[in-house]
Length: 304
Image 1 (cartoon, rainbow, N blue to C red):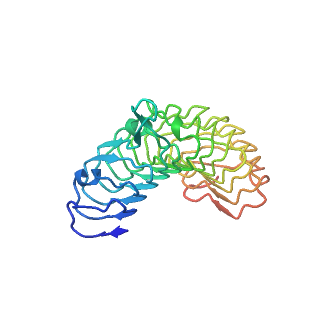
Image 2 (image 1 turned 135 degrees about the vertical axis):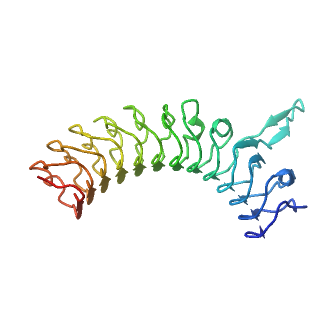
Image 3 (image 1 turned 180 degrees about the vertical axis):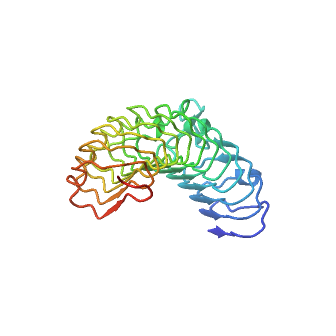
């Protein structure tokens, strides 16, 4: 292990090929030419909080964790390094898979993740892309992440459209999409996410929630935040299938009324936030379906 965080390093010299942990966060590193050596056993790479603008990372079969957050990366390339000679004809072939499980790219200047999506991160479980400059995921193929990805952050970007990037992420449990510029969500955007537990959509520009939007999030969704959008009305049955939901935040949306039976199906709900809306009344059966409710926030606007 080599640990030299919080210094003023700009580059590195010779590194032993047997090195497994390289931990150099919060230095003054600007380029990674020195990292292209034969680190065949490298497992953990931490370069957070440096001054890297362009990153060329040679992938090793051994590497499990790559942390590049809190840099200024706008261009990112991963270069496969598992080519071996074929026993029959001597040609170089790519021996997969790679074993990287954690890829941290938050707090950079990335406006595209196309380069990541074409790579061999079949074992990836955690991908953090929050606080970048992404505007769209329409042209991104995340299908290679479908087997194992458990945790994905896309919050604090500039996303206006999503396409259908989550269509095969069947084991995803944590998804952050808050603090973007999303205005519409198609009915099938979350259809594959049957194991999702946490979904954040607050601080977007969403104007409506289809009653079919969450219908496949039936078994495990615990936390849902759609606060600080522009949702003035809710359809009956929007939350009907969310029978594991414990916390729902609808605050600061401009809601003018709530439909009868709005909370039907949310029998384990314990926290409900409706603060800073424009409600003048609530339905008579409002609390009938939530026997476990322990916190209700209707502050900020008067109820007539």
